[in-house]
Amino acid sequence: MKLLPLVFFFLFSPFVATATPMKLAFPENYAPMIWTENGQMKGVVIDVLNTVLRNKLSIETQYDGYPWARAQVNVKKGLADAFITIPTPERLEYTVCSKEPVFFGNIVIYTYVNHPKRDEILAIKSAQDLLNFVLVDYRGNGWLKSKLPDAKVVWTDTLEQTYKLLANKRADIIIRDTVNFDFFARDHKYTDRIEKTSVIVDTINIHLCINKKSEYASILPDFDNVIKDLRKEGTIEAIIDSYTKPSVPMN
Image (cartoon, rainbow, N blue to C red; front, side, top):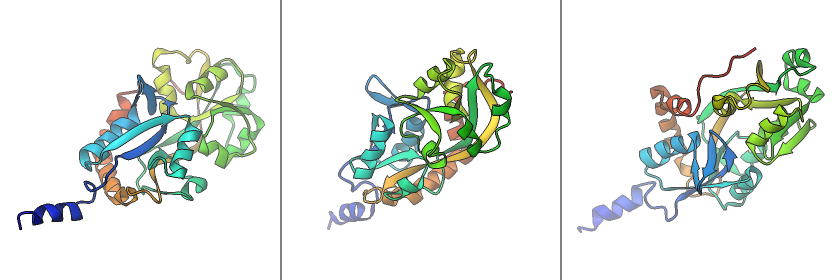
C-alpha cells in the first residue's frame, strides 16, 4: 500500500515518466539567438528554453547544433524532437507548433553603405520588390525560400558570412530581423560598411515546433502558458536585451 502514491505519481505526472531528454536541434552559428561555443550551445534561445523547459516544466533537455539545413532534417526524421523556427507549410507537414510565438519581430532590409541603388532599396514596398536585387542569406532559411523561391540568392553556411559578403559588396541586400545585426554591431564591426534601413518587408513569429511523433508533443499547451507569463513579466525581452545594445540609427 505504501507504494501506491509513487505509482500514481509516475502514472499521472506528464513529464517525469519520459525515458530520454527532449532533444532540440539548432543552427550552430546564429548568434545571438543560438550558437556553439566550446562544444556548448548558448544564446537567447537557450536561456529562454532553460527557463521554460527546465525550470518551469521540469523537462530534461539536450541541445545540439548543426548546419541549419541538417538540423531541420534531423527533426523531420525524428532524430531530434524539436526546433525553434518559423512554422512554414513544409515544416508543418511533420511538426506541431506552439500557439504562442517564443519570439517575434520585424524583418528589415540591410544594404551596403553608399549602394548605387540606395533610393530604389529604400522605396521597396513588398517582398516581391526584392526580386530586382541580389540577396545573401544562410542555407536553410525558410522565410526566404517560402516567400521568394525565385529570388537571386548568394547562399552561405553561417549567419556572419552573410554580413561579410554584404559588407564586401558581393550582394545587394540582407533581409533579417534586427536582433542578429544588433549583436554583431555592438563592437561596430560592420556599421561603417552596412546600412540598417527602416524598410520593413515582413514580420515574423518564431515558435517551438515538435515532431508529430515525439513523446514531447503533448507539452505544447503548458509551454504556451509559461511563454505567456514570461512575456507579461518582461523576462524574454530582458534576456534579449542582455545580448544586444540599442539598435544602430535607422535611416
